[in-house]
Length: 115
Length: 113
Image (cartoon, rainbow over all chains, first blue to last red; front, side, top):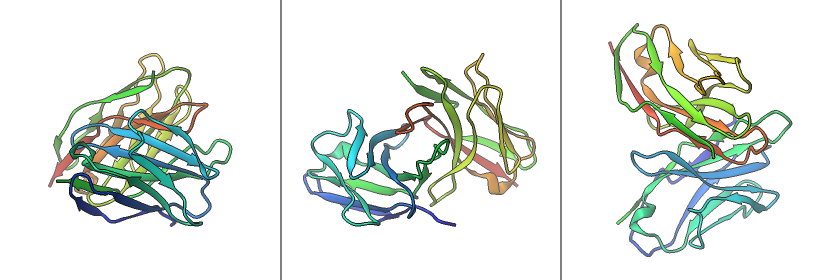
């Protein structure tokens, strides 16, 4: 069964460093998402991406964040200068986009630890 | 605005016990409602969903009914197994904006043999 994959599973970085989290969505899906979950808190929407551009973003998704689909398979989240409060689990998701199909398929997540 | 509130965990049950995990929501319009499950080391997997009032979603013995009058979508299972141990997330998506899901904080279920 097709699945969303994410790498790495765990990333440790120093404050101020740039990180790139990688995702491979399901191949025929058209919509892509990033969510994050700070330990003990809710899963929060960060950004949605469709047709090579951001379609919606939350207030969390400030200028330090960017997303890209560099090729036909990868979808990346970049944090330019990490802060301690960026430590969280980051989930990638994708959705086909057909009429009535609003289910999002999630990856296993990348745990980001900022020291 | 849209939001989801679910009961805090962890919930610890013995095998074959009855499970209820409460979920209530606030939404503008008519959302679709979901339960996702996360097994250790894995991603969020869709467990079941309901797209309109009074719909019942069911899968693997789990059920949840979309109750518009009480704005609830409680997850139930009649007899839990050790393999059901996981974190369960209630979520909603706006009927007309599938761009983002609103999640509850997750409820960890531990089932003991």
